[in-house]
Image (cartoon, rainbow, N blue to C red; front, side, top):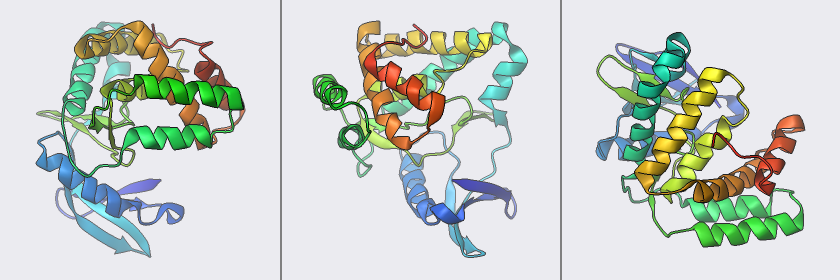
Length: 245
């Protein structure tokens, strides 16, 4: 949705791609709220227009993606990195910020428009109603090792366009779905340990997690990924595939 370029001293500009021009204004507003809540984020310094493209100016974080640290460290690095990863997600999910979009209505609408079999849509919509605990906590909803930067003093979370207020379990389920097709042994073990710690932090069990994964996978089919991935999402939504259990 965007490209990132160096911009001035200690900042970068995240420019919307032409077909997404304008979303940076929303992200700048969200980042302002997130930063004010004390969450670790690259702070925004206003919105600019360059070559007819909108962009948000952000702090330049000196660090690497968590994904690279994980791949460099291999299996010995999984335990400490997955623990901190899960703790960071829970920190976000324990935060309350007014004025963010509501996640549950979004999921309901996405399921309705998903193109899944009608009976499956009815089942998943009903399941969502049962799972919804009416909590309105911050859900990053795109939380994965490529969107966490390991800086010199702290870990910083980037890409807040999908953010919403909703049940914390939905955010964990989304993380599992986003990386659910990985086969790399390091990543599989990382996601397994992140799942288990995440459940412990939320006081939840595997059954609840699997149910949320089904709903989130069903809603994700609306994104039109196509081909094998679309078929995989359908199978996850049906409950035929468990993720990192």
